[in-house]
Amino acid sequence: MSTAPSTARDTLTRRRLLGAALAVGAAVPLGVAGPARAASGAPAPVRLTLPDPTGPYPVGTVALHLVDAARPDPVAGPGHHRELMASVWYPARNVERYPLVPWMSAGALRELLVAADLPVDAAQVPLTAAHRSAPVRWSGRKLPVVVFSHGAHSHRADHTVVVQELASHGYAVVTVDHTYDAFTEFPDGRILTPLRDPEHAMGPADFAADIRFVLGCVDGLAAGRNPDADGLPLPAGLADSIDPRRIGMFGWSKGGTATARVMLDDPRVRAGLSLDGPMLPALTGDLDRPFMMMTAEFTRTREPSVAEFWTHLHGWRLDIGAEGAVHSSYGDNQVLIPQLAEAVGMSEEELRDRIGTLAPTRAVRIQQAYPLAFFDRHLRNRPGHLLDGPSRAFPEVTFLP
Image (cartoon, rainbow, N blue to C red; front, side):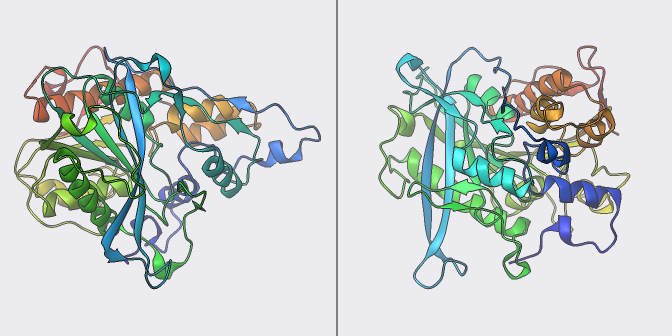
């Protein structure tokens, strides 16, 4: 397996330090546990919350246990194959009888907090807007599909703000835990955390291989086959609602690079969005399908590999940035970390180091509006005007030439 780009450099630059801090999870303020650990009396855990999506439809979701029989798992040993946990998010109906789903499992959250050197009771897992296994809303047209790939040492829930926004507007969104580079829990109770062993380090190519397998599962689902390895019953109407001819993909950091790799290798993905992907190792293939970059730390002026990748985009392309954004600003970090700041004794300076100066409420609106506008344009042929140039509604967003 290839080496992750976030650990490939020898110089401890500010960017690498930031990446190292983010590496153990995208939803807690890392490296700020001192005050919380030192407290003699344990404070009440912070009840984290996520913003509601803005779309007209309620959201449903189902978790799937996937096994790729074509890929042996050298970590698990002989006779074992690559296992992944994934979730499908979709517009739902009759949701009242179906419970809301937590942002991640309690066991996986516990491991994430331990890895972050935070008390395991520092926070209560937030609830999402999605209802477990609610029936799919049928509108007469099949749902375009968007696949999500997370960053290094993270998990499939780390961009739930974007995911549930898309689902509330009529998309089926598939999120994937990249096993051994994710905090993930399997149906049998196994909880796996990111491996620190360089021999088994996962790079964007490994992420891309996972996604190509998942795309095959999407094809199978659309053909009426249940991809769940344990035969979990699927939500009513899910198989009939998937449109495998309209697939997009987005990813954050390493997942953004993986998005580019998948598009270079697999024509099934019609449009790709990178959220501050470093594009390392360098990508040199030409791409003629739509690709959008939302950059912060890994900009074309600061990262040669991103600038090089840009020159190979020969179809519709767009690069935007948000004033005050940092590497994690286009994800759930931006809204969850401030909620924990006071409880763990984070200073204003430490908070700025982790979320920049982009206000969380504005970051949420940007996360909700721009990915939706991109996929609406390229998967639904709904051009809109948001991607045509600067908007008075989003003065923080700059269109980069």
